[in-house]
Amino acid sequence: MNSLHKHLIGAASVAALLITGGAYAQQKTLDGKPTLIVGHRGASGYAPEHTLESYKRAIAFGVDFVEPDLVVTKDGVLIARHEPMMSGTTDVADHPEFASRKSKKSVDGVETEDWFASDFTLAEIKTLRAKQAFPDRDQSLNGKFEIPTFDEIIALVKAEGAARGRTIGIYPETKHPTYHNAVGLPLEDRLLARLKQEGWTEKSSPVIIQSFETANLKYLRKQTNVRLFQLIDGEDVDKDGNMMFGAPYGQPYDWTVAGDKRTNKDQLTPAGLAEIKTYADGVAPWKPYLLPSKQVDANNDGKPDDLNNDGKIDEQDRVNLPATDVIKNAHAIGLLVHTWTFRNEPKRLTSDYKGDPAKEYQAFFALGIDGLFSDFPDTALKARDVQ
Image 1 (cartoon, rainbow, N blue to C red):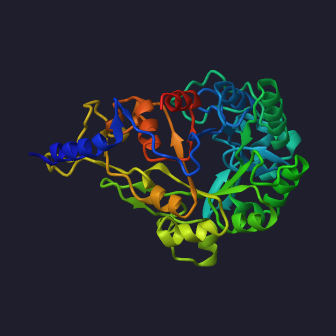
Image 2: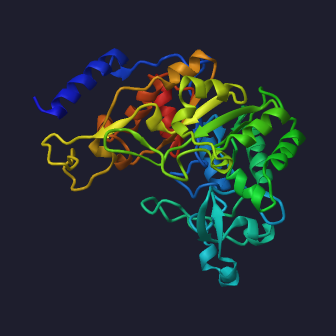
């Protein structure tokens, strides 16, 4: 019996414990409610991310929350971009009037050359147009949509919620707090002031704030009662399913600045989760921390096997490993667990799912996941509805 055969038999035995009637059995979330579905940067699988169009599509699909990543302009306005760097998601490089704005800055300790939102006024930002960040996705909507402010996102969500008779939440991420502090444009108080204007200051408010750093979440905890989530990243996953912790993804950057030698893995130990519980309502690790996967080398030639024989090695050539204890341990101390990012493309799904994204959702529902972020939230919602 080769190693692949052994693994598949083992995986089948585990799956048999989870599957009932052909579908993964839904385990209880911490609060007993259905898994929260968050439109990741809106419905970014269908429209350029962090545009009002992207958020509108996610809301039309029925998401519980939309997620704006927040950065700050030169004149102190919160806008939605995945990073302070703008070339990957806007047409800024096509604007000759801004050619001289390209510069080098340190972001999380990495010298980066790009156009930075912090060097542009809001009026200048409004002359740019968004583009699809993934080259393998539909590019036909590039150049059609503005970069929205946080104010515009709030207005959209409130209007859409009123029109639909339901509350739609906002799940902002404070992007690179250390960077924004260094350039004199801190995020936190700007965000809190805007939320206070809406009366969103309590745990019951339709807001969740997330961050990969820890110091700003601890600061926010002292200033507001809205729900806070600790994001946990990683550099990559090795062939055996182990997380890799290279900079700048190996630890929160405020730990790097402080000389803390721990890695992101330490945040997910029982002790690490207990520390997070002191300042946050939940933890949001990258998916492989919860359900890892590995490559297969059944013939022992030192190379990963091309399981689907398509001539490429990608996620489709990995097999799932048993789930970790992170969700169980977090739930045991009252921490909610969210995870990210779910995508439909077969090349982004392990072999266990046979190209069907619904099967990945079902696997995570079976673990009792409390919330998840999806680029294709219509698929996520359909998968949840059949549970």
